[in-house]
Image (cartoon, rainbow, N blue to C red; front, side, top):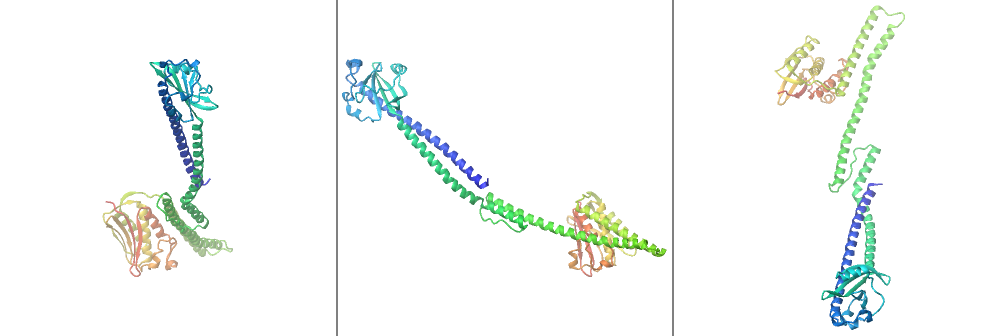
Length: 476
C-alpha cells in the first residue's frame, strides 16, 4: 500500500470518526430535546385541562353525580369549550375519576382508554404525577397522568398522551440524513484527499525517481528540483540534494583513489619487474655450462646482491606507505627538536662526507612521534644530497602558533609543473635514469607528517634551490 493511499485512508478515517461522533452527539441531543419538548407540551395541556376541570360545575364540590351513573360527556359540556377545541389533535386527553373510571374525553367515547395500571393508580391517588409509556390504537404513546386535587383530595385524574411515532420518524429522518450526508462527505473527502496527497507527495515522488535514475545511470550530478516552501518536504529535498553533493564528492574521491590504486599497482609491478628480470637473468648465467669464469661469477653475485637490496628497500617503503594508509596511530609524546635535527644531520653527513650540512635548531619542543619525524628528515636530507651539490640547511623556527621545520638545498630547483606531482607515488623527474630511487620518499614523508597532525609542502624555483617545509602545532 502506497504512502499516498495510506495518508488518504487515514485522513478519511479521522473524518469518518469525527462525523460519527458529531452525528451521534447531534442525534442524542435532538432526541433528548424532542423528548423534553414533548413532555413540556403534555404538561401544558394537562395543566390547562386540570384548570378547566376545577372550574367545572360538575366537580365534587358541586354535587356531581357518581361517574359510574353518568355516561362520559363530550368536552362541549365543559366551560370555555372554544379553548379546548384549540388543543392539538395529535394529543389524546382523558379525564378519570379518583378510581380511574373514564369521566370525559374530547368526543365522548366510551372506548380507547389510555393505559393505567393498579400501581399507577395508587401513585396518582397519592397525589403524585406519573409518566409512563404505553400503547394506544397500535401506536406507542407517552402518557402523562396528573391528579386534580381540591380541598386536599384527589377529585379527578387528567391523562394527556401523545404518539411517539412522530418523534421516532423525525429522529429516523435525522439519522438517515446524517448517514447519507456523512457518506457523501467521506467520498468527496477521499477524492480531495487523494488529489491533495498526490500534490503534497509529488516532491517525494521526484526524489524517488531521481534516486532511481542515479542508481541506474550513476550520475551523481543530478539534483531534485523543488521550488516549494521549506516545510518538511522542502527540507527533505534540500537534505537529499546535500546528500547527493556529498555522494558526488565521495564518488569522485573513490574514482580518484581507484585510479591511483591502479597506477600504484602498475608502478609497483614495473619497479619489481626490473630487479626480478635481472635476478632471473643472472641465475640463468650462473647455471650455464661450462660455468663462467670466477671473476664474472663474482660480478654476477654482486649484481644479484644489489638488486636484492633494492627490492628489500622497495618492499620496506611500500610497507611504510601501507601502514600510513591504514591509519596506523603514531606516538604523541613531547620531545626536544634540536637533538633530532643534529642526529639526522650527522647521519646524512655519512652519505656524503664532502657536503656541508648546517643545523639551525633553537630551544623548540614538539609533540609527536620522534622516530617518524626522524624518518621524514632523513628522506628530505637524502633528496637534498641527491639533487643538489651545494650546502644543505636543516632547521626550525616559530611562526605564530606553528613550529616550522625545514630542509633547504641550493640545487637547480623544480619547475612549477613538476611541483604539482612531487608527492605522487613513483613520480620521478627527468633525472630518474641517473639518480637511484623509487619515487616513494616524499609520499612517505607526507603520509607521516599528516599522521602527526602537520602539513608539508615543497617550495622551489628553478635556479634558486628547493625547501621542504613542514608545519606542526607549536608546543607552548
